[in-house]
Length: 261
Ligand code: URA
Image (cartoon, rainbow, N blue to C red; front, side):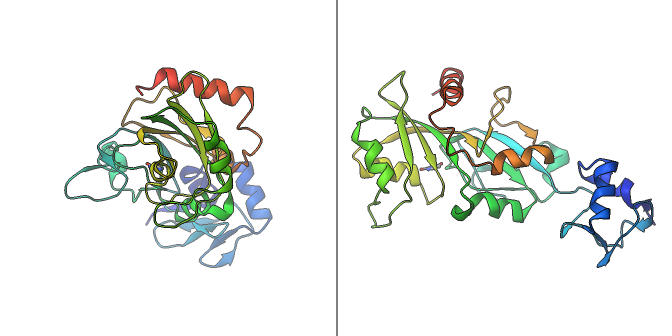
């Protein structure tokens, strides 16, 4: 029987430090088998006990988050009989950990996909009401038109009558064929359909940021990097004021020059 000190088990399987765990316990945020725990040094049977921190089960693997640079021809699903999935691309030691993509990019789209085993967090970043922005660079078949900005800001109506939430779009200063778009929702092929509604066509789509966390530019296509628990607030951060800031524009330029658009 794996008997371990509670604080050691939690620190082994999360990124909480010993002092943070003490604090969690002090504030009644840790439960073992549905009982609030008062001491961090109690011994627990880690195989049989249900250990919860803030209502989330801490398992041997714990709640994990990975940023993947998805290449094209790979599908954002856990299982597919025809195509390579994002799970197929994971290193062997992560393949059986119940990770799934939190949100989808189309098969021919590339960029930042978050993989996690945390259903609550996934729901949080995908639900439009939580206002977590996703940022994309697109290459267009035809030049960007200035009136897209107003049309997108009013909410584009798609060909089937669905109306999108207002979104911000800008032409990238370097080329009339590149645009940057901010979305707070994820309808099927949404960006492609939005540009189709204004008479254009998306030739290439790259997601470079979720919330305030950008894809790490050292990642190669198909590889992953762990996102630490302490970085999660960045994903949830309100980025409303960032879109027109100089730093954001610099970041876009650097993605546009580094990715093979
Ligand atoms: N919108 C699209 O059309 N495709 C994507 O992959 C993501 C957003």
